[in-house]
Picture 1 (cartoon, one colour):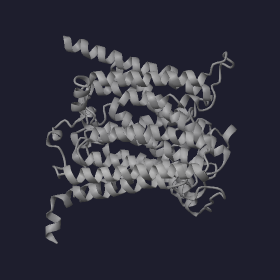
Picture 2 (cartoon, chains in turn cyan, green):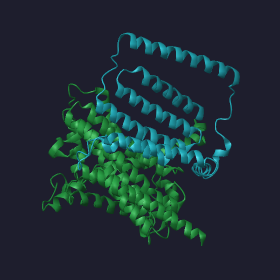
Picture 3 (cartoon, helix red, strand yellow):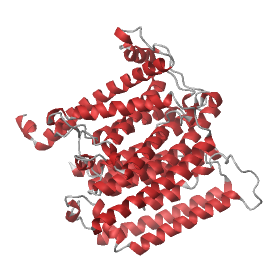
Picture 4 (cartoon, chains in turn orange, yellow):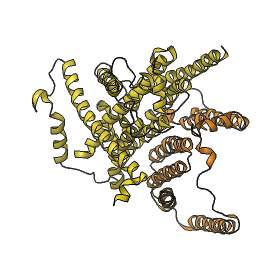
Length: 193
Length: 335
């Protein structure tokens, strides 16, 4: 049953990802990205990475994409209406980079790819892999982990400073609408990264 | 044919299906009677009698409501994004119902659909997906009041989600597991709410639960005095019904989680093992009454008060609680 599920979710992932870049309406693109994140989470589940799957949904689909949507709606972005040389330039660059990437991956898969076991056996330990991830994160990868959280903290402080503006304090009391939503993404990531 | 019936995969899927259908219908019944209870209790709190015309004591009122909603005219506004407009109400109900699959209603295998070792994370993931319903519903209606309601709710739910997630962590520290079954078993002798850390976490959890489900006093997204009906202004008929259902399903889901995390789940004295699930439903009933009680007691918060409470009070207190709990556990481990 697992291979069938893998193919189904894989197909969903590919189609949703394609729709993200092919659809002209930014909100619809964002929604397809949510679908892509969820199918990716399902694939993690098939690989017995339950913790990663759930964190994928909580952080990416539940927090970051909501903020994305928030911004897209707030700015009321119109359809993709760029014309002329800019569009040609951007499309051209996209095609060239995409072609290079495709050639590269074809070469890579042709030379190195081999079918391995579907799920790593050691991950099937009784307690699941939440414990294993925590242990590794706080011992072997402690330094990168802390550095990442520091980086996110710096980004968060930066966002607050920019949002406050340079001038003297004008209005205290009611904050501008939407401002409190902004720091949510870094804080959320910091907690679960 | 017989080969199919003895196939373990097939048996597993069939058994799971049966449990899903039973739990789903039980919960939908609870949801509809929750609406009845809300109207009845609200009535008595305001010195009225509440619905009492359809059936004895008005007990058939939910059925009448649903029938009415089905037969109402369905209206889609001119400039609405049709597809998103249809998806949004579904998104309101589905996440709330999915969470029921990991809740252990009783000690036996038959009282839960499954016991995954990341049960609590499933709940958090689903509650974070619930934001989409309101945000998308507000945006796709092409109505300024609906859009403002949607934007408010995304800001509100993201803010309170954080404090809610953090308030669950002391429980995890005590239980050492993300499985809801394991967390319930750990509370066999002593509920978490009876410890000082658990009490604090429980209070934070219940406040954020009110905000997550958009219930008064946190029902800013649909503040009728300023935003007409908020995100569901343009919705009619059963699409509106789904939003309504989703709100109440969310209340029940979150109360179930609160029962499991803090009130000991199905643990309780006197009853034999087979009837322990009654304890679960008794505690659930108390929490649901609490939700209704709060709604008809407190006035609505202002938007800036809401954000201040979330970011400047609940979040630091939840973080401090985690620190204190870990310090206590470390001290206990030292002997």
